[in-house]
View 1 (cartoon, helix red, strand yellow):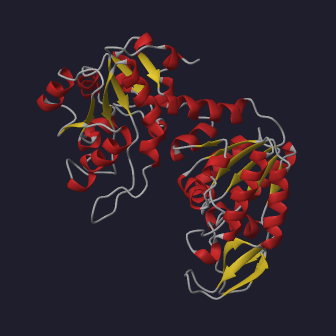
View 2 (view 1 turned 135 degrees about the vertical axis):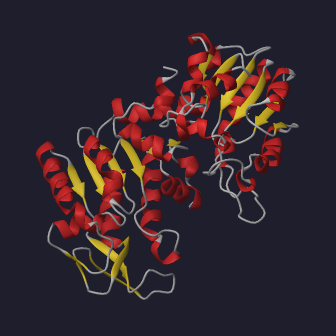
Length: 397
């Protein structure tokens, strides 16, 4: 039992930081993926079932200098109301009279959603007086927004200072996120494979360096693999390459060798003559791609080799796709990895998938329920695995 599950929220007003930063249709403002909202329902329902009331605060998008219609959290109201099966009250501002009065009058079993926190620059600045105003609404503070745990914002870290230690909690989602990440990082069952993909080596240097002390195997796919091939003297045609990271790539390979960590690069690639859905395609060794062609996915030999490594693992971390999986011609590599991770999990491995693209991939191929934990936090998860202290976690721990 956790502190959150043990606590009774009867007659308490719970101020909950959630992550309702969901994708919206640009014209209708309808939610196109409600995963983040659904992920917070167990926390909200536990408080309501205890006889407490709930005040929800979140950001949405990146508004610049004040309120913008397209970033209003009122776009979330209808879906939230459907999911909770109740009327949701809405405060047209996150601080000020309307919010204060609605919070004060809130009855047990009721839910209030505050307007976008980022309509105020004070939120991202971690402003203390702004955090204090927010803190006045609740008797207890619950952080259930792992996706923003790496930010020292007013609502994610500073507000916790205004609650005593027995009145601030992680919500159920945050608990699951933290315990899954800690399980992979600190209670690792070996063999441990980290699958790191995506476009740029520069985005993943810190996580790769930290994983060299933990992983037995590191699989590198996606655009970033070609920087490694070029560093090793290969021909990569027009494939993505960070010229200023060639020495970094060499250095990482050298460190891995010294530490006995096996780095797996894709032996062959699906190549294309342009970055487009209707491109001509072929396959080629990844270190010998003809001029004018670019690698956009891993090919059959790499898929088989990577699958083999994954199926022999006990712990799996996956962050970043193997190719441009949004285009049908270049989705097979990522799909193959997703299926291998699901199969290994079925056989008893613990798998953690995080980062927007990897999560989108397991959802696209309907495999999310076959993964041990699918994380809602991209940047937060990355920073956790880079070995950083996350302000949103430290504020409650």
